[in-house]
Image 1: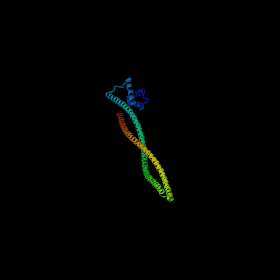
Image 2 (image 1 turned 30 degrees about the vertical axis):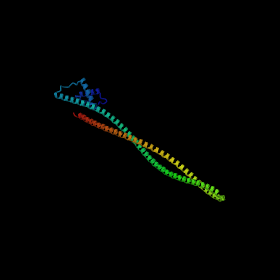
Image 3 (image 1 turned 90 degrees about the vertical axis):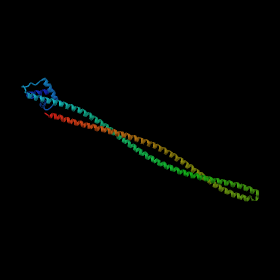
Image 4 (image 1 turned 180 degrees about the vertical axis):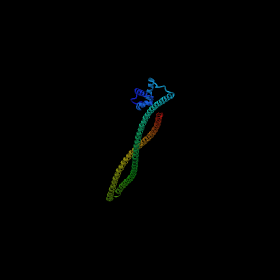
Length: 323
């Protein structure tokens, strides 16, 4: 490529100076005259234009060997200039391709970073979902344990309630027997009084005494009956309390069962979310692997192009070093 400060006027001045000293104005000679500056391609183009405008007058008629030497030197210079043109074009092409590949590599790296970030986010979300799932499972197990305890308590209360019902039935039977006995006693007493009154008036006092005794016995029986009624009322209060407790426990058990069903639904939803997240992570991993493979292929291509560039530079250097 042409360096700053090399133009046609400078090349023309160096050519005239060489001609004035009797030196052939070749590309290398002009470049040396210019202080080893300037592109050989540019110097060759300017020399060609100057040769067409100002052909150099030979000092004397050259012989055939000198003409052949001059021709060979011009051909070598032309080949070298054309080779330099091809090398410059190859360098320009390689530089453009290298920049394009560098841009592609940068884009691929950015996409890879984005995929990596997305993968990290998905992994974090999956870990959070797994933790929430473990918490839900623990809560579900706790609720199931509490539900089993409540069911056991309800069973025990049912057994106690059955025992109380049996006790109440037994007390009612006893109460009925007592009332039947009292009624039978009253009937017998009434019949006995009637018989005693019909039998003899003299036995009224004795019957009255017996009646008072019977009344005292009746009072005792009534007291026993009252006590039994009070016991029955207490048992009825206990039964109502036990039934209220049973209803409360049943309500709590139903509420616990509803909570367990809700937790099971949440568990199923969390399992579905976890499966979906695992599928997304698998897809991201596959996409990441494909991106990495493409990046490696591009890096291999860049390595090949750099090797080709080094080979071209070596060839150009060899062409320059070859006289």
